[in-house]
Structure formats: C-alpha cells, structure tokens
Length: 118
Image (cartoon, rainbow, N blue to C red; front, side):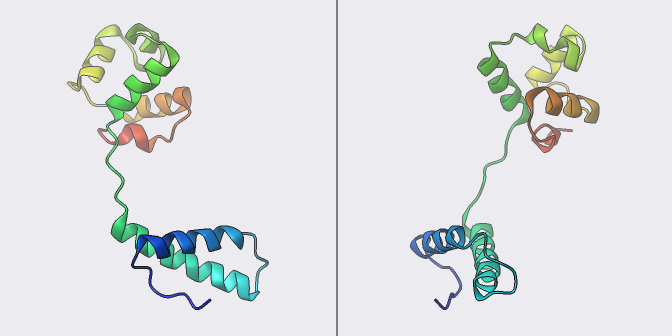
C-alpha cells in the first residue's frame, strides 16, 4: 500500500495494525522500508492529535500507596521523616532528585514520573 499522511483516526488505526503486522521485518526489505515510513507517519499523527495529560507525582505516590495498602509512615525509609512525608504529600515541599530516585526504585516507575515537581 502507498501510505500517505495520516489525517483520520481510522487511517491511524489501519497504520498501527499494519505496523504491528510487519514489526519484525528483516532489514533492507520492502517491509522494513514500509515500517520505517509507517513509524514516522504514526509519530506525526500522535504528536498532533494525541495529548497525554500531565501526571501529578503526588497523586501517583498516593495511588501506589493505596495499591500496596501503605500508610505515610511506610515511606519514612524512602523519603525521610514523618514531617517530610506530610509536606510532600500535601504539596508544600517539592520532591528532590534523590527522593525521585528512591521512589523510582521503590515503586518501579520511571524517575520522570516523580521529577515533575522537582
């Protein structure tokens, strides 16, 4: 198929489906060239039409705590004193780079999630 700029969601879905079908194409084949073109077209469409909302790091921490049945005091080994934790969870204190690294390791999430406010 001769691919063109993706302008509709239906065409976008068709491009995604085709990209998945040929994702493991061997290099230097017509399918690998088609895949490279599709990836560019898909990325262009997504940058223009798909907006990912900003992630609030405090809400992520609270969600992860809830998922694990944690209380604020359970974060003391990661973030420090009870006062620090309270200040962070209320938004009065920013997450430092060191805290973001510890949260990343503890919750197994990308550090960027926690660096929004740092």
